[in-house]
Length: 384
Image (tube, rainbow, N blue to C red; front, top):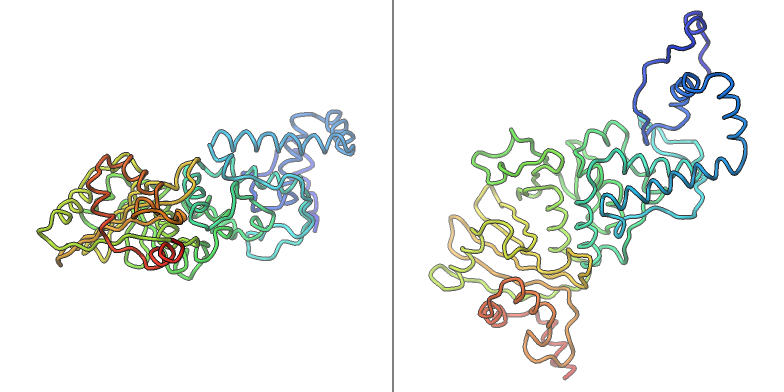
């Protein structure tokens, strides 16, 4: 419904209405009055007439589309996510647009140009996207996605929350919400009655709400905040996502589990690794605290977070604070080698990555002596 022109607006044609940032979660048409005022003031009447005449030509609109795509390519490279995240290259998008701010369904048609503008807005205004590269590489090596790069589709855009909820999230959650539905079972970020949910309720902390003497206070980052899920407190939201994927991969996972009691040599080694400053062995290290500090857990990622990784492997360390016992477990998604001799022969790349990272051959012997999942033993016995 068009607004009636007022005498004030006619007498002050050069005074634009209050402006607001152009938003991917607002339709282009809603921002059209603001855009018109800006263009008119910049070009004048004759310039506007020439622009409108040019805009009716196919080459002009095609060039706009190409320009947006080139800018989007440049931004993905600058954020170092061009190998893991992309957009639809040639598809046309003719179905309804994004959800409106009031929660109503979008009814306008989404052309390719509009689709690209929306994706561009997300990348250009979404902060630093580089941290998503690790999430998506781990997703690939744990079977949560079948290939990289992951494509931001028009369907992904339509699934985004309302503008108010989207912009209320920290940057890491804003970015993750764009592609999380592509990561498979249990990885989608959804709105709940008390905030966001990652399969279950998610609590985001501020610097003031962290527990007393929290070891994560010194590294707190409001753009990727500490968070809690299922009584586990994580240093960063992105680390929660990584931990969830490597702990519950969709690809087959094999492990060597070694429980230890106080007094043993391995127990002391586990304690030392849990206390070692980050990053352990120069590897990406994910920490979380369970049940208010009653148990500390650390994941040392040996493979899966780099661009050239072909499998995921990590060490999991657990130790209770008020009860005896600790455990050291090696997990891997490397495919077992038929006829391999011993654990290092069945999983050669995994044990090679462990030796390269730790530089400790005796640690390999300790892990190799641990019980292994029956599936690996059975597979090797029946094929030799």
